[in-house]
Length: 210
Image 1 (cartoon, rainbow, N blue to C red):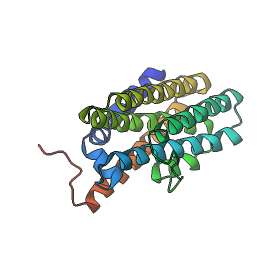
Image 2: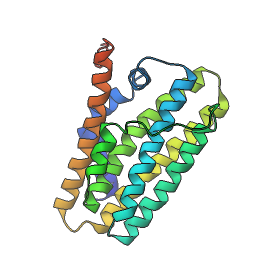
Image 3: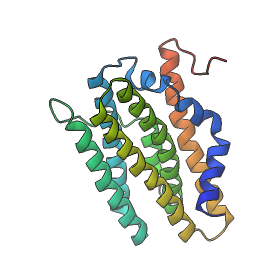
Image 4: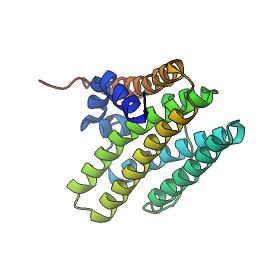
């Protein structure tokens, strides 16, 4: 297996969950149906801050030096993402708050291969989130914010691509790939579960209307 096969296998096995996470209901779930620009930006900033803090913790105790440097680089990138979003807010600051179940799962990971698999899963979830943010600001006619989230989407997708490539560098057998894939799938499943629960609380069916 290589990095491309790994990512494609996850997208295939989690196609239903990823498709639903990519729906227009996602921002409704993430904001408790408060679709104001301020609430959406704060929600996006909080997500970037959670990722930043997860990667900071990993970079502190990662034993593989090459991977540690990768986590440190990603931490700096997520810090930049957070700063770029909060710069759009009047008070220029968003507290950490609850990191949420997906990042709780990520922060529980200790093995290097598991963390890399988790990053791939997180990048696939974030891709759907960024797409909905882009769509929101396109509809608002806000070119500046649309372009910002397009850039963030590209950079976060690259994180997942490079994590998969690094996984290929350090995996010694198919079991390493399988364990990493299980983690990536778990991360997506947890993100989907939080999305579905939020919609259920709002009285909205997370399943698409056929």
